[in-house]
Amino acid sequence: MIRLWRLADGAPLGGWRAHPGGVHGLLFDASGERLLSAGYDGSIMRWDLRGQPLQRVAGLPPVTAFAAADDLVVSGHRDGKLRWW
Image 1 (cartoon, rainbow, N blue to C red):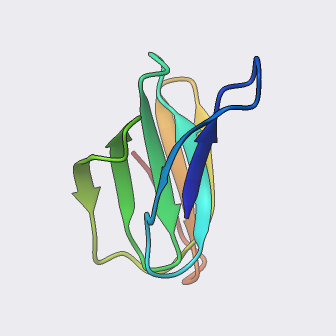
Image 2 (cartoon, rainbow, N blue to C red):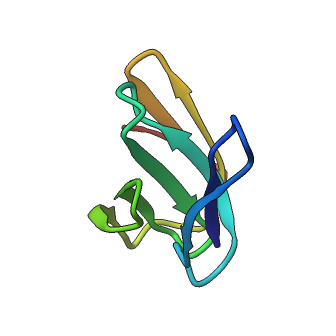
């Protein structure tokens, strides 16, 4: 489950079920207007801030780590491999 709150006053902005398994990574894009999530279900998703899916990469081994480096995203997987996006 992904939930967003406004930092200034703690007001909830919304939430949605992102992956059927656990969410193992969450990043805002450079604009701050979209989110990337990575799940143990082996998918990486791009979302708008209302929870609408914009893009999905599926069929990967379960994601166990997720990080950004400059304009690249790196995912670590249960099979021991790293993937650059």
